[in-house]
Length: 137
Image 1 (cartoon, rainbow, N blue to C red):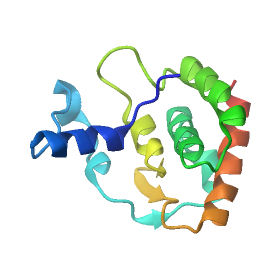
Image 2 (image 1 turned 90 degrees about the horizontal axis):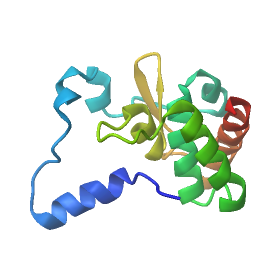
Image 3 (image 1 turned 180 degrees about the horizontal axis):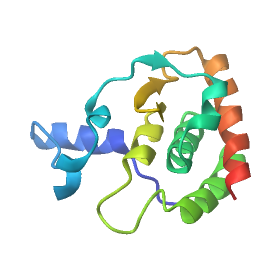
Image 4 (image 1 turned 45 degrees about the vertical axis):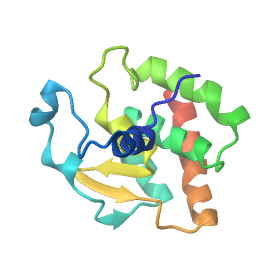
């Protein structure tokens, strides 16, 4: 399964000696919230409010941090990605998905994160993400 690793892109950019990552031409049209840092800590209850693409990205985060097993998450993520076009074939990408892969939520124009939670609390949120992802397919 191919995964979109936003962190890897950033590290590769640093190693290559570039100071910034070139965004697609439409990046200037993105809402300002995409460039802002998270302002709150997300909870399990917030999972119901995020977009399907953000759920797919969050599921990727949960699998990659071993908060959801690959057995439970990989095939489910592939199904959610296919249904929601969370990882499109073109080079434009999906910012909601990308934000989710970093453990962040986008709710009502504000970014929240689970990365500041301890592992058991993140696991609880990831359980909610898994349940929501199942409801999308």
